[in-house]
Image (cartoon, rainbow, N blue to C red):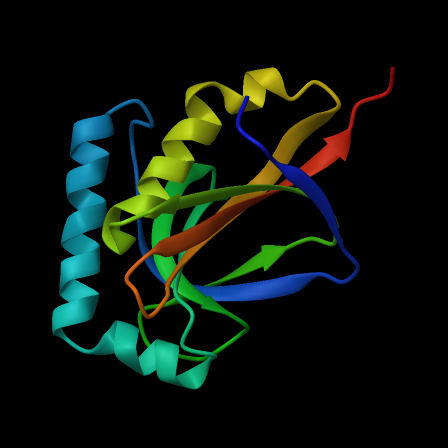
Length: 159
């Protein structure tokens, strides 16, 4: 079983991000392509760097339900007014925190997400994921090793 912990966030918080909505949640290939296209666009036009500079320089990959549709984006912690972004609400409460390590900073967030939704959520029986979103960050150290965490708001399951 993949290790995880439960952390409690005492206050609601916001994240600001660029992203794309999906019409079909199960179109894995199409959704991955749309996400990669958006990431390339905001990287090349400098918009992601502009947003990162306003915050603490830590980028998050964010999955959210926005206007009733699955949405994926890239953003920062906090509320900022940058053209083309959305501000997302994350609620106080308990969060399932799933760590991961790897050598490729660009792939680690997707690897952690794959582990979480590819089986880990079924193994966790004392909490259930309630959303409306989740976020993953990845940091690289000086030697190139990467560490990341996915945070998912959850409710304790009554026994």
